[in-house]
Image (cartoon, rainbow, N blue to C red; front, side, top):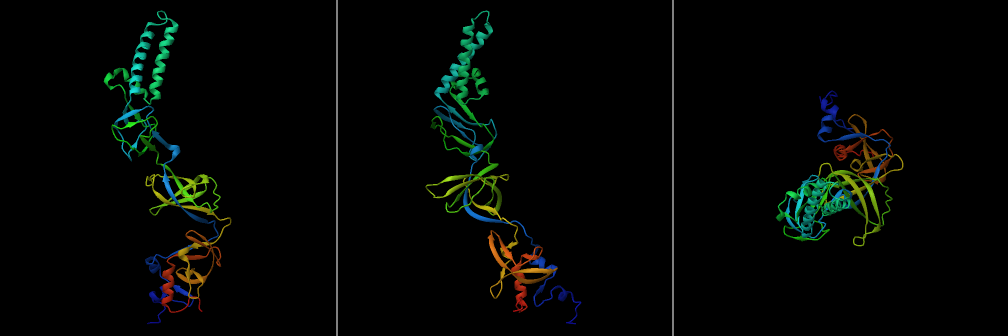
Length: 352
């Protein structure tokens, strides 16, 4: 019976003058999502290009403190190193002399201590102790560890002058621009270590944009389709003479270690609206034949009709709207499919 109202298909997808009723199965296949919209605070966004930088507050430059020659490397670019791990072995004539002076001063200090105050004058005792402390302090100043200094007396004198620089903190080797046998001066950067668990993002913003960003203002960092929550930590008050932009520095957690220094990212600064508003995803908006913007409202489960709305501010992926009451259920995903199904019925959803 063509007019049998008990027919399941007709009951599931019955067309109306104002809209259409879709079965749960068809809604699932078309991935139609319906959400209840309410007055809520929303965030508008402003885009800026950004670059991932090492966290300068958690980075460490490995450099010699005297003119030296590189003998061996013990860590490579990109390697994760632990605190105290040996990074590079160097040779220095100044260190060789300091080691020799320490060995002499240490031997003399041990001899004087054994003789004691009853045998050696107090001034001689003080002199030996002072010479020992001075030689020990000089090796510390050159970057030798306490363990390395303790092993000097057991070393072959032919190894004098060799010393190793170690990692003062856990981190990743971000820079190691040197080769074995290369001479380096005091203060030259041999390696750069950085803790990549928390990184900086430097966003370049046009000086014409008045963002008025407070410290800890939220922002979104986008890389390869993945979003990372960030916050503003510093804002430059000068303009970069090369790019003619203002630098805004953000902090971002990098727990999955997917972000690395030098990468380019998108930065979306987020600004909270002053009042709660109604907003829908941009994909929920469909333009009708007469040019009006509409959304599809669900009055009853699976039954949809087009309702005209007025558009307000653009808020990133959302758009402020008016013309609906808070608590209205709206198609937020799959609106184009609903519109096409209504169009198949050959009538105007606005009954024009």
